[in-house]
Length: 294
Image (cartoon, rainbow, N blue to C red; front, side, top):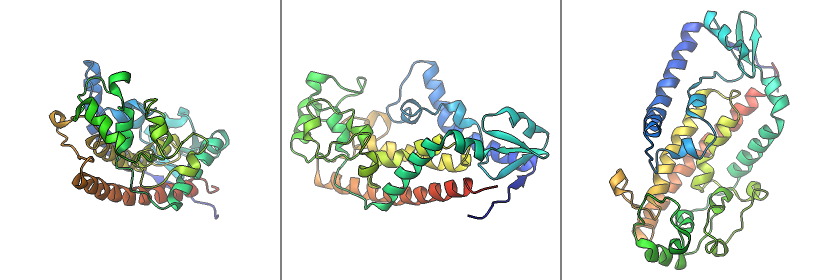
């Protein structure tokens, strides 16, 4: 791969991009932080901040990505940031150091992204992973204890008992109740993740955000937020199709226990699969450019 000549951004230009990014993040992080300050919860909108390891403050910090030199007096503030280095009258991401210290993370992300992108999408799960997490709740309790089950405990169990459960995503499967585990057609593990992830899976597509922020600051923050916003919209759909009653939260249910609900679920799932595949390709392409020699 040919060497990449770093682009140079004047301070006015990169400061503008920084402000735009922070405004974009604040739309999501602001309400979350306000709720957290008063001990309130939101079953949909808190997820990306509580399940994933990226903190709001980390997400707010804008990065241009590898191959871009930030110039101007304010750029000097970044000279001590992790994985940054001086470059003439500016600073840039030190891709060489990042690669040297994070090689395993880079290789695993590339493996998961590439293998998932190469597989056909599956559209027969109907979001039943959330139902399997609430199966036999009369015995195990409800995972989201402050939410009501839309069909009640018995109705939720009936849906699970009458359905084929075929989740391929380990990080959903690991939250199944003990009684639901043997009902799943697959037995996902962390070791088999690279062999089972497929682009129809809502959780695999939400995880694009995880792979993107794990590659920060190598990737530009605009791309990380593209992944975040896609994950946010997928989370809304995921919980609308769940067994929980979220009508009071402004989210009408996708009734996957009905034929019409299943059709609606698959229609939305296909749209997200297409969006996610495009983002996967962009992530892989950007990663390759970022790792090209300077």
